[in-house]
Length: 311
Ligand SMILES: [Fe+2]
Image (tube, rainbow, N blue to C red; front, top):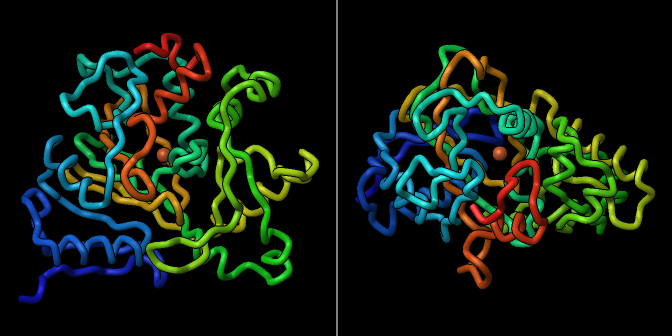
């Protein structure tokens, strides 16, 4: 029996809105495979009015692989599912958070980035589900890193072939206004990844660079940073970019290994925005600690982001 899944492209090469399947219930293997194929092909999929709750959000996410435990950056979790990352601006009591450090962190997320590129073991799919949306703003913007690579001038492809970037969470926070010095960041964990890699799900090449990318290994700092900025600017030209606005129940899934994303502005002191995210580890089952982000913060020592890394 053929499936009724429908995929409507958003850009000719990037992003599709998916309908015709109830993802709140367990799915047949063939349907699961079809969804994974669509995700690999389009890089970002948009699902309207899903009907998902916390438990079915996590259960559906497992279709893509190992779901990471979320960092417990706010201390008190709002959810019973430990896999749910709290991407909201509200606290456990539902009040809008008026904490400058948490707000700075959100500001960091408004830079073009890939989730967890500062980890050695990267994240692949992020599944962001809307529970409450502000009346205006609060979109997510996405950029197509495979087509951006495909379209690069040949001389740039040659120039970046074989280059490796160093990614640091603390670097992107500094750029958002955190008081880290270059020396602070030097002393904290970072990860290295090739600037261009094969995206396994599609067999296409992709750029892999974003706000966490701090330096190009072996290149003078200023030159490396100029190259990083140039590539991000190239990849976020209008022909590679679209945005999604949410109503409660809507979900976006993006593949961090072939996309960039950024949060759009909204009045985060005036309106609640309740977004919850699961994150699927790239590759096979985890061979290390289940929550790499928390492990990284423990290794980094106390931070402004989480003054008590035991939480
Ligand atoms: Fe993100």
